[in-house]
Length: 109
Image (tube, one colour):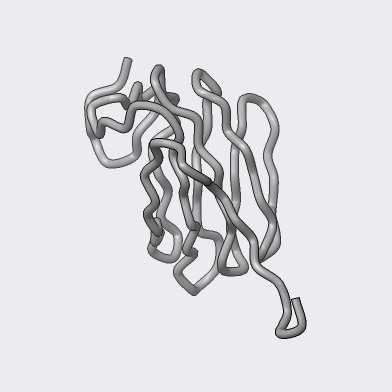
């Protein structure tokens, strides 16, 4: 394209798109999903991502594919919030979260 480029994350597929903002020092529960895959695009520095037994420090613009049943967690290291663009593929239901560990006292399995 003469004006630059674009990135397309989904095309004619059922999907849900949201931006997750994690407060400085905050962390999501360690979790997995039965009915959806996720694509995360890191928007800010300071992200820490756990995927199964791997710990990543992705840079802004980096993309992570998280297949269903993959244990994962997002945290914000540092003094600034961390945002991640999340595209979920499959059946999206907020109840489809199996929490394994949670620092906020929510029920875990």
